[in-house]
Amino acid sequence: MSQMPQQAALPKCPSCAEPLEAGDLFCGACGYDLSAVPAPPADQPTLAMTGAPDGDVDWPEPEPVTTGSTEPRAHRAADVPGTDSGGSPLHAPEPAASGVRFDRRADLGEPTEPTEPTEPTEPDEYPLQAPDPRAEAPAQVCVACRAGRVDGDGYCENCGHAQPRERDHMERESGPVAAISDRGLRHHRNEDDFAVAHTALPDGSPATLAVVCDGVSSATRPDEASTAASRTAGDVLLAALPRGTHPQAAMHEAIVAAAQAVDALAEPPDGAREHAPHQNAPACTIVASVVASGLLVVGWVGDSRAYWVPDDRSAPPARLTEDDSWAAQMVAAGLMNEAEAYADERAHAITGWLGADAYELEPHTASFKPDRSGVVLVCTDGLWNYAETPEEMAEVLPPDAAARPLHAARVLVGHALDAGGHDNVTVAVVPFPAPPQGAGSA
Image 1 (tube, one colour):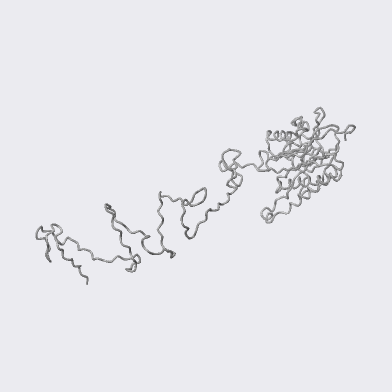
Image 2 (cartoon, rainbow, N blue to C red):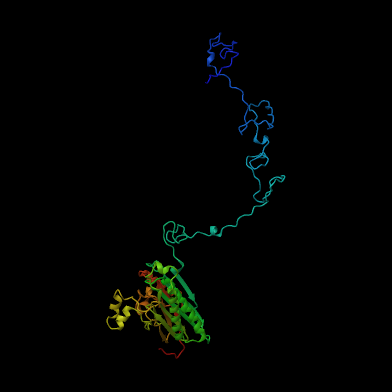
C-alpha cells in the first residue's frame, strides 16, 4: 500500500523565526500553520548527459568572482576535456577582435597576420571557375515589343511574338548578281530558296548564274526541297561552265540533277511515314538563268518565272518562261484567254514540278541573245502575282537595277510586301552587259 511522505521537522517558524519543537503543528508565538510549508527536496547528485553518474570527469574548479562583478562565472565547452563526434579533441575558437573574421585578403589571398599552420593547411589561393560564356552573352530582345527576352524556342517571353528565323529573310550578292528571299506576311515559314554565283568560262570571260526555287506547300518538307534543288543546280552550273559546257546544256544538266536531289528526299525519316502516311513527297519548282559571252539562257520547271527588262525602257520588256500550270494549259489550248485563266481559282495549280511524285520530268530551256544591256529577273510567284505582265514588272524595277542589283531586289520584294505579301517572295537580279558590236538578237 502506498504511504504519504513524512515531512521533516522545521527548526524555526518560517513566519516569525521563533524556535520550534518537534511535533508542533502551529507556531507558539505567531500561530503560523506549519503544515502549509513544503518539505525541502532531497539532495541528489548531478547526472551526466548520458543519464548515469560519472565520477571520472575532472571538472575544473570555478574561477573566483572578480571583485565588483555581479555575474557568476560559467564553464565554457572548451574547458571540458573531451572529443567531438569524430573523435578529435575539442578546441576553443579564437576570439575575433571585431566580431567579424577576415581570414584572407581579397587581393593577395594571404593571411592578415602570421599564424602557425594548422592541420589541414588551406591553399593560399582558391581556383575560380571559368565564367559561363552563355551567361555573359547579351540576351536577344524581341523585335516586336523591344522589351521582352527571347526564349530558346524563338518566342518573346513578354508578348509571345515569334522571332524572325534566319531563313525568314535572306540577302546575298555574288559579283554582279544579287538575290533576296523573304517569308512574306502570311506564311509561317519561308519555303523558297535560291543560289547565286559567278565564275569564268575557259576563255576567261565572266559568267553569272541565279537559281530560284519555290517549295510546293501541299507537299511535305517543301523548304528542304527548295534548298536541295537550288544548291544542287547551282553547284552543277558552277562545275560545268568552267569546263566549257554550253550554257544551255549545262542548264539542262543542272535541272536534272536538282530533280534527283529532290527525289532523294522522298525517303522519309524513321517513323515519319507511320505518323503521316498520306503526305506527298517533297516538291518544288525551279527557274534559273545563266549570262555568259553575250548569251542569256533560262531553264525552268513549274510556275516560277524569268523576265527580261532592258536598261533602255523605251524598248519592250519580255517574259522568258511559260508556266507549267493549269492556267497556261487553258490558254495554250485556246479554251480561255490569259485574263480569264489567271482569274480562275485553279490558275496556280502547277502541272510540272521537281519531286518523286511528278508525272514526268520535262526541263524547259531557252537561249536568247539580247542586242542591248538590261537585267534578268528570276522570281517566284510571290513577286509576279503583284507584277504579272512584263510591263508591270518593268515599272516596279528601278532604272539603275543593273548598277545596284541588291537595291533593286529590295525594291521588288518591298513592292510584293506592300501589296499584301500573301506568299513567300524571292527574286534574283542578274545584270546583262551590253553585247559586243555586231551581235544580233535571237
